[in-house]
Image 1 (cartoon, rainbow, N blue to C red):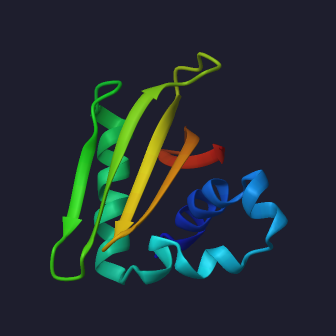
Image 2 (image 1 turned 90 degrees about the horizontal axis):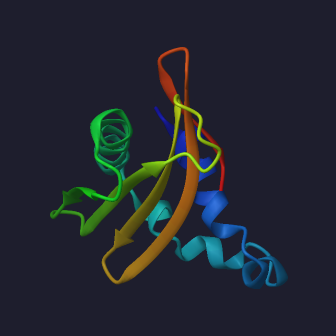
Length: 117
């Protein structure tokens, strides 16, 4: 299961000043908390594909219509110019709820690891 990576993506998007003032009560409504294993697998596969081969600025999408879940990954250049890293905008949706997170990923031992927001 890819939960550590997914949890980091979720927490990076959740850690905004507005949310920090209200505690983590908002987290219960985040789309990823509604995802099933199939959604996590679709999102992770799309994330890896986008980071490996996706052109900068071009969204790669995933969708699980039966669950009402979807999202997109838009890769870009690493802000620090590292060749083995990329920035990505991760958007997740569950029905009418949406979350957007920007994160930097670097390839370590052949796997993408989220480094920061």
